[in-house]
Image (cartoon, rainbow, N blue to C red):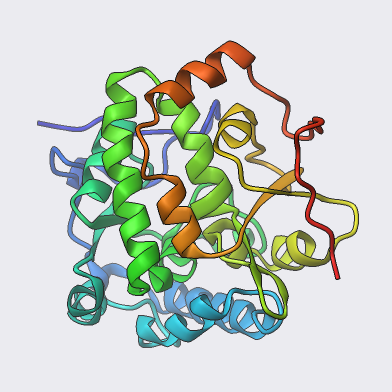
Length: 284
């Protein structure tokens, strides 16, 4: 049974990736042998650029876990990463041809299987790509899956996602994913640091999110977060800040059903909104 391709947001661009290879759960073989030398060179150059930017900007937990990806001069084999990841936290990464629908995505996370896009951007897209590719998914997401607390949070998110899907609240919960797993900031002893994959895999947004005096940073509040729309084609206008991964895990323990009801009653907010109940986080 063929699966349907998925596009990014409201994009009219044709789907990336070969969905004819996908199983019913959207996973597929990595087909590592099909990567060209140019593909490996793109990965190597992206890795070198991003890793050089991390000190003073990225979460120490991320920096500590990054070597667990293994090779940095070519696209890693997923099965080799899994040989280290499974014993560390019980997770594994699985290849997918691109974006996948909400329900299969939640189901994979709930079962400690993280979907990683298997294609890599073209050289022309080196500085910016709309859809997540293998570099974004591997470099941005996978290192923190070696962190036990964060790994447990991602699984809890998947479990909550299955319930949210049944309640018609998938869009609300997706904002929590966006503002934590993709674009989250954390307060560490030496200042604000990034832990979200969308930030960590972006050369421009990494510095902007942590150091720019013009952006809005507020303490994470679930209702505020789920009310807030986000941007897919520009730097985020708002970043939500946590104090620890333990705080994030504990914050998402309760039943979200009444939270969804509250969010719907209050209505959504634009990405750059500022409201009286915000708890701003200042630099310095």
